[in-house]
Length: 225
Image (tube, rainbow, N blue to C red; front, side):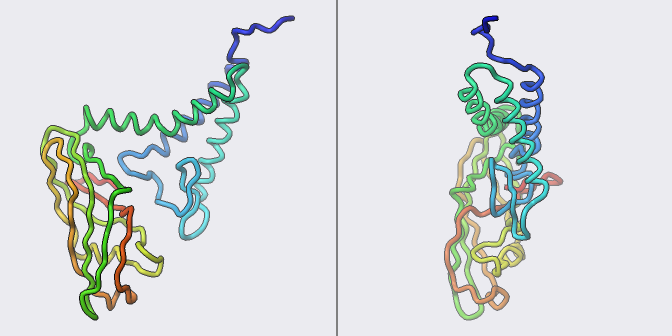
């Protein structure tokens, strides 16, 4: 019996289950309203944090296994174009969430949900002022996608900067929250300056750190970015 060369899917049940598992993981790991739905980790695979300071993250490992099973079922359900369609599915897994977030923020979002934060372009500089004080200057880039002015508070996230032994965030948040206002459709690099008591900072003399995680809040709304 000759095969029908027009047939692309050979097992519809595997196809549906495979797509369902990939969508399930994508939704649980959806990077909105928080940049990472799970606590940030030291190591990630397929955008899923699998390890933090305390070791491997059980939840992240389970999601990774589910995703791999979903990709396997999707691939083995196909008769033709298997490699191309699997690559397309993986690309959609990575890109579709950011496309949907962009559409939402440019159309329906309001308040802090319309605020975008460029994590990769953020930077904090630490300079020793004297034996007891350390100055901190952070540049945090924001964009407001809404038509309205948005005012919100900024706190620094709980990830340790520089070395693990230097717990700088609690010190920086002593003067928090830092209030920020953005006009409608405004893009702005917000500069936050404060001073730290280095007697509690384990002797840090200075330096620069990038990718500064923050929390923004407005009333009872909060986002981790």
